[in-house]
Length: 165
Length: 167
Image 1 (tube, each protein chain N blue to C red):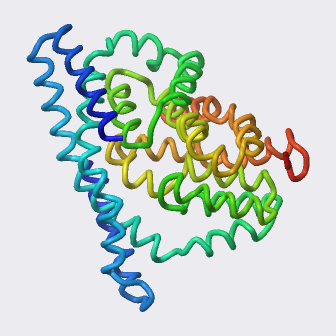
Image 2: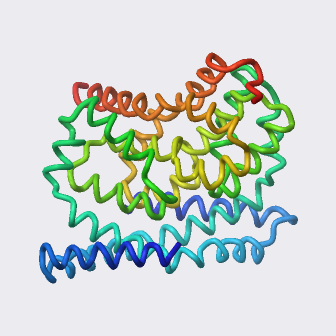
């Protein structure tokens, strides 16, 4: 992963040098350094916070929430659980596999994945506020609130009851 | 940025306090877990920021403004949704790039659409995690149901900003 980024950085750096000269490369490097200094402390604190949350809320609790019901209540619970699930796809998808195979409806699983993607609290705290600022993040979260419901309802509308393949 | 520092510090203090009250949660384990997750970031983050900074300097601003600026409207929202769907990698790669686009003049509703598409469609994530772990039958149905989400989010953001500015 890091090697890939290194290659991309090297290629784009050389391209920038050729097209705009060495001073532009220096400016861009300085910008990246300043951004790193601003963002790194937040990332460190937020990752630590995420680790604490993972210890405080075991996956079993989230599973119970989503498994609790179907209908709008199920979608609402799936949305809350998805938003609170910390960690990347490593953490969220195994939970969906468990739910899906345990018989949760397709709509509830889709709502859960959508909520994890658009409302995921940990990603907002670790990355988004640091990069885009509070004002933008609040706007994005506000308009994202209905999305898990929309995705869940569309799933129910488009596919049969349980949506099994 | 200050607000970001304050909110994250307060939340960290809160979870540490909650953990202190629970005998089944050890600080040592939580810190070790955090360190495990942090370690790869310490090399990846600087390199990703550098790459994003170079790429941002290469993208002509007036293109970005013309294609996805505030005035680009619904077409800009659709373009941003497409771009978001194919943007590879986790937040560490995508956010510096998206931030570079934002400062290059991409409008807020367009950026909302881009990040939403990245979050719900993320085709690279579907390929590497979702299909292998949950299966194609789940993945394609979820993707079909999620196609409209990014444009909807962009339009909602456009509308919210309109209301805020008028009011």
